[in-house]
Amino acid sequence: MTIEIVPGHDFDEVATLLGPKNPDSSVCFCLSHRIPAKLNTSLKGPERADYVRGLCSRAVAPGVVARRDGEPVGWAAVAPRSELPFARSTKIPHVDDLPVWSIWCIRVRAGFRKQGIARTLIPGAVAYAASQGAPAVEGYPVDNDGAKVDLTMAYVGTRALFEAAGFTWAAATDAVSGGFPRVVMRRDLR
Image (spheres, rainbow, N blue to C red):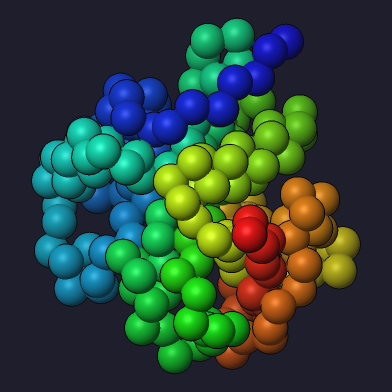
């Protein structure tokens, strides 16, 4: 089993990981925390796919894809915080003025979970951010202290998952996900 992490420029791979089975459905497509709420709400069905297709065609990919033996099996969204609603969040604090990148969505396809793929996605996202000049990378996972996180809310990751990737606690937040408090975890790349 070989896991390779690559920039998410291939829309078909990204759609396999994030898109709906029915193209007319209005699923998240990893846009909820990437774009302003009003725009997110306005995009319906195929418009969401078109928006993501545009993101995939940019010079900087919207995230990274994990491939196992060539098949897309996981996703991690990573981008400069300045491009995201997190830049204006009242619940997720800025630790300092450093132009950090953010990881906010980690997804592993059904049938491939509990195989260590998420543990490769975060370092892969960090490596991609570093290759683009990021001075640090942040994540905003739940601090669940080992308790089970509902699968629908697990996309933010856990504090332990980020710690395993070399991140350290940077700040508390006023945000909650799945009933657990979220924290700012940071990995310095300087």
